[in-house]
Length: 196
Image 1 (spheres, helix red, strand yellow):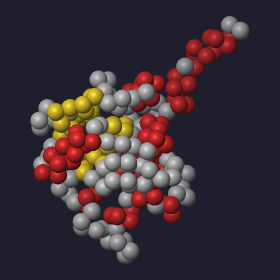
Image 2 (cartoon, rainbow, N blue to C red):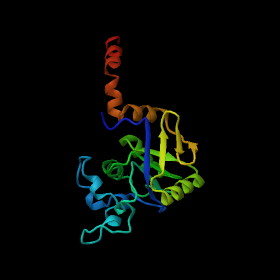
Image 3 (cartoon, rainbow, N blue to C red):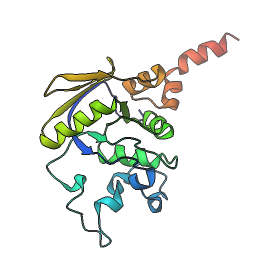
């Protein structure tokens, strides 16, 4: 299995309202030498999390114990910039399973779907509502129902539906990447090949 199955996620969230966060901010280029997916979470938002001496910056949200959870609620245009999939590896390795924003860069969104992080696109007004509620009440939970393609702010019951490609949705529900999907069809492929 390529990554954890995603069906229903209920979690608190970490608010990051900054707009136009690019992939170099998510994982700086100097950390891209590794080819395995493990360990990137340590350097997620490295230059925002740590000063030049490697000490945590107290004013950055990931260093604030007030906020935690498996959902990152981000500002508009999250994941812009270069196409590095390492940015999503870092998000996944840190422990996030879902990123919510009013707009994602296309390549970043596709990388999320390939690696097992669900990108949930909501309206700008609902994104602002979630960010405001989480900032005021850090114990606020969100529910992400992939089967129903719905996100709900549990404290108020407000929610929206979101779009996802049917193939990618199925893969996420099974924890498959593209290779796993094909391997899962191995017997059907063998049967087809034998009939030719």
